[in-house]
Every structure is written in C-alpha cells, then in structure tokens.
Amino acid sequence: MNGIPTPTVEIQWATDAPDAPDENHLCEWVRNASRAAGGVVGDITLRIVDESEIRELNRDYRDKDKPTNVLSFPFEMPEGLPQDAIDPLLGDIIICDAVVRREADEQGKTLDAHWAHMVTHGVLHLLGYDHIDDDDAVVMENLEVQALGELGYSDPYAGPDHNTEQTP
Image 1 (spheres, rainbow, N blue to C red):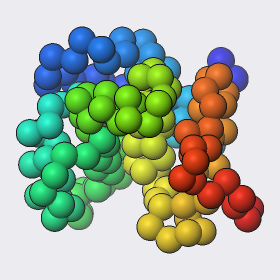
Image 2 (cartoon, rainbow, N blue to C red):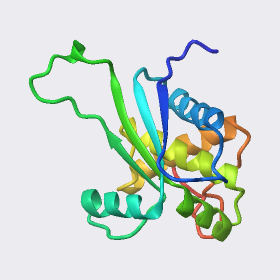
Image 3 (spheres, helix red, strand yellow):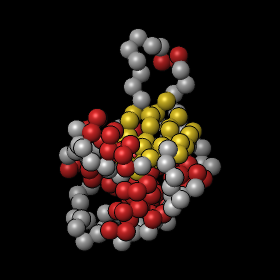
Image 4 (tube, rainbow, N blue to C red):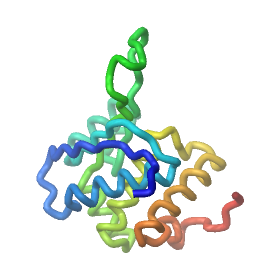
C-alpha cells in the first residue's frame, strides 16, 4: 500500500448477478477511486440491485421514473449529532447489474471495464464530485480516466460521441 487512506467497503447483493465482478474486484475499484481522489477514510456500502429497485430509487430521489446504471447517496450527519458519535460513513452506492450489462454491450465495452467505471463514478459522487456543469464534468471525468488508467482500463469517454478535447 502507498499510505493513502482508503474506505472500508460492504457489499450487498440484492439480486442474482452472475456476470457481476467478484467482491475483491468491487472493493479494489472502490479503494482505487478513493486514492485517485486523494484518499478518504470511512465506510461505503455498495449494493447490487435489479432494475425495479434502481428504478424506484431513481424515481423517488431524482424524479426520473426509469432504471439507471448507478446512484450515489452520500451520508449526511444528522443535525445535532456530534461528529465523533458514529464511525465515519461516506454513503451508499447502488449499481444495477442489468443496466450495466446492457450498456457495456451497447457501448462495445468489456463488462469488467464498464463495472469498474460505474464503481469509480459512484465513489467520486460520494466524495462530492459531480458533472452537472461542464467545468465540474471535466474534473470528474479526468479523475475517472486517471483512476481507471491505473487499473489498466482505457478512457471510458473516448467513444465516437464524446468530445475528448477538454480544457484542463
């Protein structure tokens, strides 16, 4: 290890996902994304779900009544609770196996590479990164590309529909 703090990871399997990566890979990707963002200590729950569960969450929390690939729910400390009252919680990442499989196929990506990207993307959201405006998107995408490159994966945004000429 390189001394950079990393989170602990709990994996929850809420669906049968025979093509999903094993827990070792999922944990490795969470920790790698954290290191790429500068390191962080805390607990992350990674939950693998079916389309109905992610659709319900997407509808209830984002007002989008459709399945999506990944959702992140950063932990918010309840008001009035002392910071040291509980162990540091970073939040939850929810990933839909069926959507990830479908997208990997549609985008001509390996399943492993797309899973690594979705895990990395979810972790960065937990750590406060976003892609709502263009400047923030450039920062987040560059971190994703860096983190995935460290794992040997190619740039997930280098497809024909993505503008790779970004200003730093």
